[in-house]
Length: 120
Image (tube, rainbow, N blue to C red; front, side):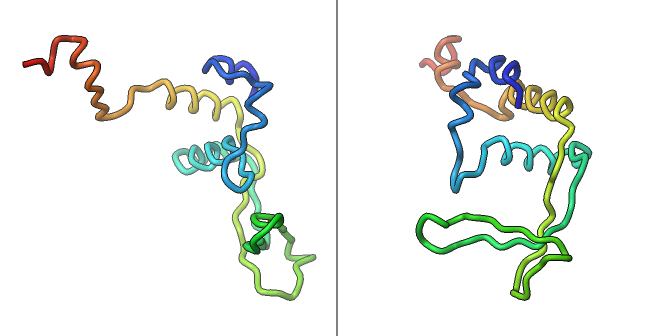
């Protein structure tokens, strides 16, 4: 995500890169996956790989290894659909539109009181 987009939300791009979600997954990767679910045309390159994820307790928890059909080891693995590239301008436009839109069915009790509603 580029600095201008982050700054448009009042975020400091020099600090935000240190913020990772659970298991070291970048919040941008999670947002990209959600956006691709809404609009699959965002993904410009994808591939299928064999994947293994460590679930061992400790420092290696969440470590991910991938192989192609040509170098896959002889162990039981899952085939994973991996998003490799995204149309960033289209993603950024969608992200800004979604984050700027009003929350559907939102009810803010403080707004009602400020407008004189909800008082008896």
